Image 1 (cartoon, one colour):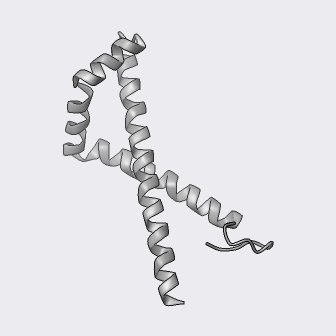
Image 2 (image 1 turned 135 degrees about the vertical axis):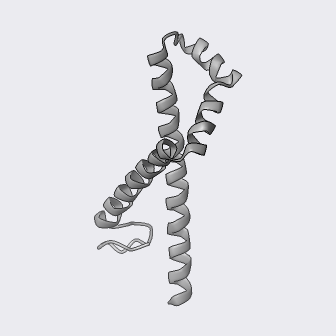
Length: 104
């Protein structure tokens, strides 16, 4: 990690933070677009949304309308895409740091 002006090794610069945030947002959008445009992922979401667990969740939250159910599915998709993007980004950062450490 880059150190800032006060020199603490765990601190990162504002530029690095903004870059990581932008990357996280773009990865999340890319994964969400993949769910929309890759047919096998769309089918996987449909199968998941029709499981007994999701049906129980609908009942527990009192969601009776189709629109409410679709909104819950969309929220679930976005949460999963965000978590996946966070894991990918963290893995890339760790690989980058290891590569830089070997190079130095």
